[in-house]
Amino acid sequence: MEKRTYILLISIFVICIAMILFLAFISTSRDKLNGFERRFVTLDPLEQLDISQLSNSSYYFAGRTEHNIFLGSYVWPRTILQVNTESQDTSQITYTLSESQQFVLTAIRVAVDSPFFYLSDGTVPIIYRGRLTTRIASPIPQSRSRYFLNAISANDSIQIIKWVDSTRLSTLGLMNTKTGIVTPRKGLLEKQIDGFFCTDGKIEIDKNNVAYVYTYRNEYLITDALLATVFKGRTIDTVSRTQIRVTRLQEGNTIVLSSPPRIVNRASALIDNILLVNSNLKADNETLVNFESNSVIDVYDINKAEYKFSFYIQNYNRNRLNSISVVGSKIFALYDDALISFALPQMDFLSNGENILHVKSGIKTENLYKKVSQFCSN
Image: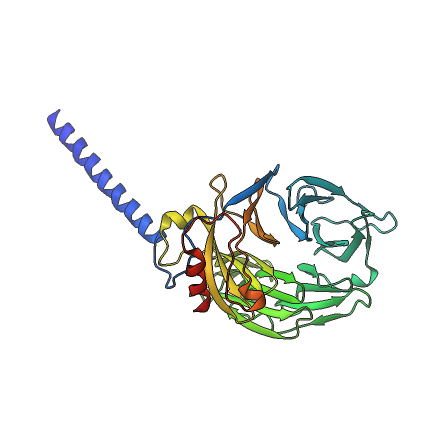
């Protein structure tokens, strides 16, 4: 009996040591150094202003105006949720398709560029357009020239589209919806591995500026609305090469991801000359607790292609935000089950060159103006 007790105690001791070593290994790997540091205005998250509860996680940002944000839904693709940015009251816009020309749409994505809204579905080479007032969408006949992965309105006659060309490379270009002419801008997206997954990213547009933020590398492109003038910027992390593995299926030419990719940039927003990027990588001067309990937003001046500073947006129900959008002095964060607005620092130094940042509300740090002025002058 004593021998069994002794063996049991030894076994428990060994198991406990093994668990401690395993937890220490996990903690170390999660808290590993990534080779860069952030400059924080404050370690306090931005002040939460208002919240709108959502019924599910299918919503995405479809557009914005001065007083409204529009959300599309993959579950209810025929409905646009309109959110007032002041009160955050919501209303539904239910649209219909013109009866004369209806196509079978299986993956509708809505984009609002007031007074119009657009419907696209990459499985069907067509773009619908309608007015928010009449709520009836009709096909743009000249938009049938190409299948595409993504389409975003630059103006009422130009769509910025992304598609896969004949060499299986992702390509950006312009579609003139009045003539149907597609003008590719080859070479904008730089191939590193396969030319498809490795160039994955998000298109952001505001006024005459367009940004393409890569998902798997520390790079973004800035161009005008015609994709003519381009320069490359770098986010502050050190992941310059896409870290993915792809496999070609035996039964065809289909290429798939063979392992989970390392995501660098999760979400982004462009407002005037300000690019906001929600990074997925922890800086060396951040604590693991702060990084995992918030989403970190890095601020870039696209006129100078340089990093300015960072701030936190807190998690909601233990979940990080999925995407962001900016209207006026507020930043809106979209979570799985909520849309939450926060008081955004007004970054005047990016639009008028005065190198100052005004805090409208919500950041509780003494001498903040002095600190931010120092950051912006670096």
